[in-house]
Length: 165
Image 1 (cartoon, rainbow, N blue to C red):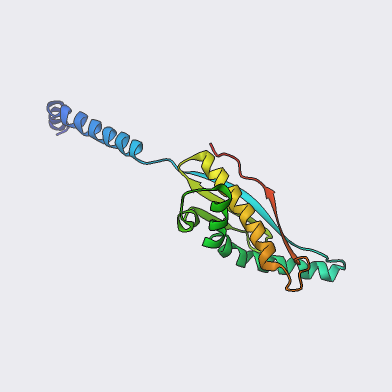
Image 2: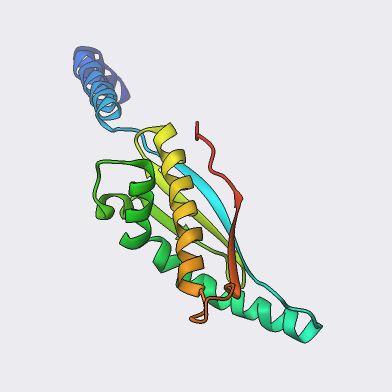
């Protein structure tokens, strides 16, 4: 029986070769059609100012952690996107930029990772940094006391996005 299978394969070798060529050609075409995406990430640190005693420091840490959860949705929103677009003088809608933004944080962390994904590696880094800067400024405005004093919560850019490779 095995000699029969071998003779069929010898007679139909061109079908096997054609199937392999078609599969490799299809894979090549799909690879060329898919546009690469680059993800650049900057990092924000959320801190409460003016904690002096150990109890105040502990409470400040908890407040910072609670703010991080709220800040993530704000970072991914259109207000921050609009500010970033204006700072870079870009011709895109806030929704277009907001759709490229991802903000994450580890549980009980005061560090927020802000990533922007774009087909242009350099642009992804520029956009990520603009979003981080825009949110830092927005947080100052959001957290500003009504009496005009300094905000209790401070957001700092602790790591700038670099061009991904």
